[in-house]
Length: 102
Image 1 (cartoon, rainbow, N blue to C red):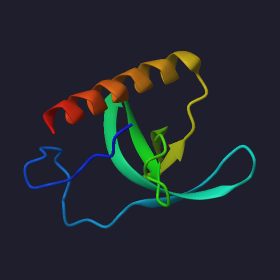
Image 2 (cartoon, rainbow, N blue to C red):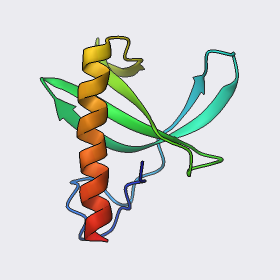
Image 3 (cartoon, rainbow, N blue to C red):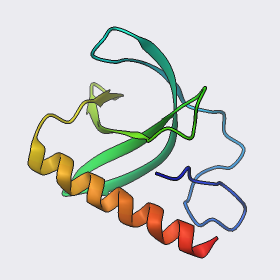
Image 4 (cartoon, one colour):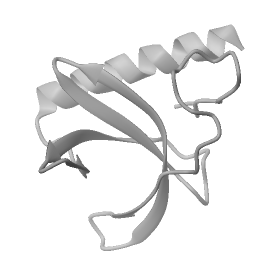
């Protein structure tokens, strides 16, 4: 997966003066990793975030669903196989298109 490169003409709608959105993510083995949100997109009325390892951004990104409750947003792992296949296909297409434009 590729990292979204923000710039004045990237067209992503993000404020390019923003700080990194850093999250601590614990994997199945209990290891914590600092992850940076690099991209968001929507599919079927849900929002998704792509996070990359802050220490090793060349590793594949991780996709989480963004859910809101009481005006607070939080990241949720995707357990449904059909949903996972759908969102990874969408993000892979987005990444492929961005790579072709560079």
